[in-house]
Length: 376
Image (cartoon, rainbow, N blue to C red):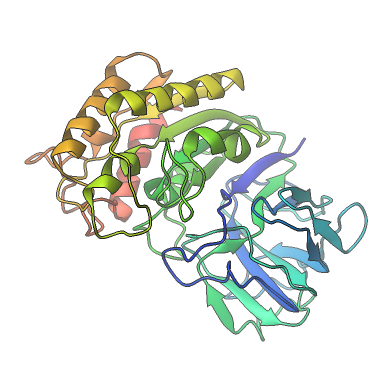
């Protein structure tokens, strides 16, 4: 039985936060992507997505192996991927493609490198904008090359790759569902110190990161993905092996209407706590219908950030109080209090603040994992 060891939530091609290749796509190029697994097994397979593609994407070749330095793959570990026994395949428009499983033994905490070769133009690529790790591109077919030579272009996004699954037979995976704080903004790129990584280390359980930077609970965005209440099934509930859902979502719904600094989501509706509560109730309903235990997390303090204002303060306090006291979640992780500055509870303390008064730094992510791990 295969279960998810790593996931990334798909997003439509967009400019994003940093330069990426999603709009241009790929043509006669190899794409090499590195992901860190949270569960091990003797065999693995990959899942590719074309969720936002309007036509099929032809994949001419693919491989996987244990990660070496940079774009390299550990000698002797590189293994060809097949799809229904064939070395080439097509990812259907608005669909996905799952590889055959391969005999590549991997351990929890180990990184694997997946290489995809496209011999025809893909068109705009379904991707995940903020990977906080490096992906590589080269000209020509290098899917059988273990060395990293020729991979002379780099990005910090993942493309087409949405999951790595292993034959661990585990059914205790924890899925974290949220926005940029879940995605890992503020963590050190390449260090794998998002709070999902830390939580996996603390608990020994597979932890799947279903965060999207900028994501909203109630509204879709061209840059920040589909609304949380709509994407939950695809991104979490349909993943094999998940038994617990941790929700941390709603801060952007509250905060985007407070700032003029981000033109990426305009007009931004002014939402009330009752609307956000209804959204959280829908996530709880969907999660429980899928047989999951659902944990609610209070929103982190964000006073002093560009998302803060009089209305944001009121709504965030009301939403957090409902999450704490309503009894509707199976358990509550009070991240707001766990990461509050003792001298000003509406703010992150400097020791946890990435610098924008909105996102935690590495120590803040450690504190989040510490607060949630006893609930698992």
